[in-house]
Length: 132
Length: 51
Image (cartoon, rainbow over all chains, first blue to last red):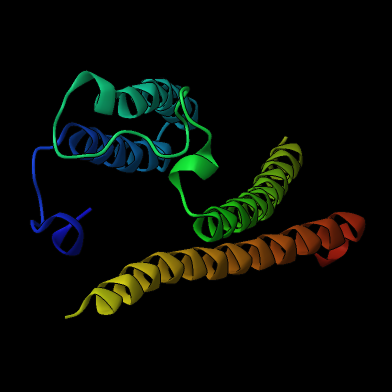
């Protein structure tokens, strides 16, 4: 959405507002997760917020059915029509390629972050062993 | 700014954030690997431990 699409920078459209809430939840998640004073407590609090954030996703999907605001109904995930009946095949192909690309990028970054976590845990364990 | 300007701006912000995150992650990973290697080396030769 935005200025070029609907002519306004911001409107209290249901889907737009719920997506903005999800963005705030995500920012809050990252802030909570980065608390280092009590890592276990930070992880638990972030997990709870993550679940709340996940509950927002079906709300975002259904918002265009429940509230008739500015956003159009879904183009891809709708039960009555196939995606290629709604979206031009060239756009659908580009979307599919991008989707696969971003999923691969996500798993690559996740594997790197996971490796970092493993190394940090090993460093912590070795330092504890050395001190004891 | 025209429509393409906004498209490039939006893509630029997202890709910039991803690249910065990737570079930061690589640097943190490299530092952690170095720290772990030093720790392992100091455990294998305790006499060389630097305090």
